[in-house]
Length: 140
Image (cartoon, rainbow, N blue to C red; front, side, top):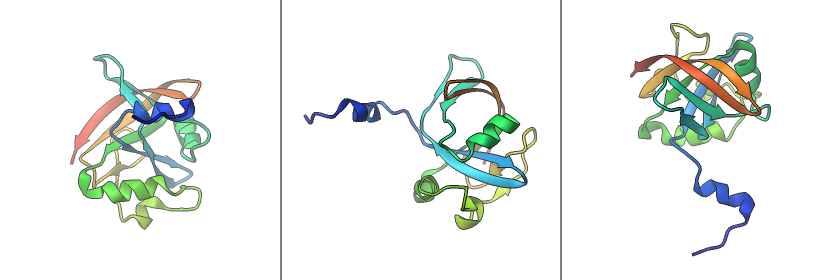
């Protein structure tokens, strides 16, 4: 057994799976990764944790909508690369050859290469926790 400093212990409990979150603002699409999320009860709601430290945060708060895309193991290495760069200087759809598709109820794009895409609307924001209501799940 190995001792960990308290500020690293949270990593042992971090939820998963890592999902892709797409946003759109000023005519530009972006993708970020999120691993801090949870389903809330048996209602069609879940929460994710993000904040101003993420480039996509402005789009989330301004448009109050986004897409949660569930990646497959086939694109696992791409997911890691997406998390290692910023949308502030990288077009991640182009760089990682992902296909944006038009969503039915949000401006953010679906990601064709993912297993499923969930169109989401932000319903509440409390101290870096975004609560959302999902509208529609599109399976790949």
